[in-house]
Image (cartoon, rainbow over all chains, first blue to last red; front, side):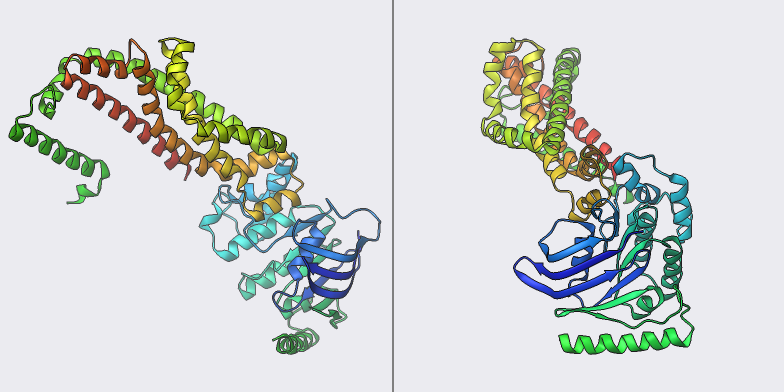
Amino acid sequence: MTALSMTGDLWIGDTPLIRNLALDMPAGRWCCLLGVSGVGKSTIARLIAGLPGPQRLDGALSTDDGQPLAQRVALMAQGGQLLPWANLVQNVTIGARLRGEKPDTARALALLEQVGLAGLEHRLPAALSGGQGQRVALARVLIEKAPIVVLDEPFSALDTLTRLAMQDLAARLLKGRTVVLITHDPLEAVRLSDRAWLLGPQGAQDIALPQSTTPRDFRTPEVLAAQAALLSRLHQDMACAG
Amino acid sequence: MRWLNYAPIRALIALGFALALWQLVVWVSGVPRFILPGPLRVGAALWDNAALLWEHARFTAVNLLAGLAAGIALGVVTALNLALSPGARLMLRPVLIFAQAVPVFALAPILTLWLGYGAASKIVVVMLVIYFPVTSAFFDGLMRLPAPLADLALMMRATPLRRLFLLQVPHALPALLSGLRLAVVYAPFAVIIGEWVGSSRGLGYLMLMANGRGQTDLMFAALFCLAGMSLLLFGALEKLGGIRS
C-alpha cells in the first residue's frame, strides 16, 4: 500500500491553475477530488499518472515508501481509450498484451460479466452505448494490479442504478489500493471517499464525510445529509467561480 | 428497377452507352480505321488476337504483380522502421522527400540500361513508383496515433515494439489502404512505361508495335486488356478493404 502526497502550486504552461495544493492521500484509501469544470482535476490525474503535457507541479508529489510513482499507477481516463478495432475482451486485456505478459482472458471475461456486459464480449466498441463503453474501460482498469488507481469521472455516462452498482463493484475490487477518484457527483463522493477535497484556484478545501465505512449505503440519513451539504457547497462554489 | 441498385450493372449500362456513341461517331464521321477503329472492330481484334493478347498480358500482369508486391513490402517495412526509430526518421525522411522529388518514371530508361530488356527492369520501375505513396501513407497513419491511445501505451508501460504492432499498426491500416489505392492506380502506368522504354514482350510492347504497323484496332484491344487488369486490381483491393471494416 502506498500513500501519496501532493503539495505546491499547479501550473499549465505559464498560467497558475491551483495554488497551495496540499493533498494527503492515505494508503489504501479512496480520495475524491471535486470542483468546477476546468479547475484542474484531470490535470492532477495526468500528473499522478506521469503522462506528458503542459502541466507542471511547482512543489512535490511523493509517496510514503519513497519509491517513484512511475509504473505503479493505473489510470482510467475520460474516454477515447477503447481500441475501435478490438473486441471487448481484447480491449480489457490490452494492458497485459502491451507489456508482453500473458493476457488473463478468464479474468477479463469475469470482469466483463461483473460490469454487466456478459454476452457482448466479442462485440466491437462501436456497437456499444456510451455507458457500456465506460464499463469496458472500468473493467480494463480493474484488471490492472497497480497499487495506485486514478479514476477520472469513471461513472459519468451511467444511469443512476448502474452507477450505484458500479460504485459498489469498484469499491470491492479496489479494496486496499490507493484510489484517486475525480467526480462531479456529490453522492458518489460521499459514498466512496475516505477523504474528499473541493478544488479551487486558491487550493483544496476539506470536505466533511460520514464516519461509516465505504461504500456507504445511499439510504442512510447521514449519507443523504452529507450529499445535500456537499451539493449546496458545490452550488456556492460554482456561484463564486462564475 | 431494383437491379439498378447494383453498381456493376449501372457501370455496364454507362459503358454500353459510351461504346454506342463511339460506334456512332465512327459511322457518321467516316474516320479511317487506322485513325479510330469503332468498338465493333476493336472487339473483333480482341477476339482474333486472343492468344497473342493473352501471352503478352500475362507477361505484363506478372511483372505488375511482382512489382506491386515488392513495392508494398518495401514500403511497409520502411514505414515500420521509420515509426519505430527516431534515428531512422532523422536520417531517412529527407532522403525520402528527395526521392519523391525525382520523377521515377523518368528513371525507366536508366533502369532498362542497367537491368536489361527483361522482366527485372519493369518490376523495379513499378516497385520504385509505388514505394513512396505506400511508405508515406502508412507512415503518416502510424505516427498519428490518437493522444488517448498514446497515453494508454504509456500508462500500460508498453514496449515500443508492442505499441507499434498492437496500437499503431491497427490504427494505420485504413491509411495503408489509401496508400495501396494510389499504388494500384500508378502501377499499371509504371509497367507500361517500363515496356515502352524497352521490351520485346508485354502489352506495352504490343501497343507500340501495333501502333507502328497501323493496327490501331489491336492497340485499342491491348488498351482494353490493360484497363481490365487495373479494374481487377482495384476490385481486389476494395474487397480487402471491405473485409477489414
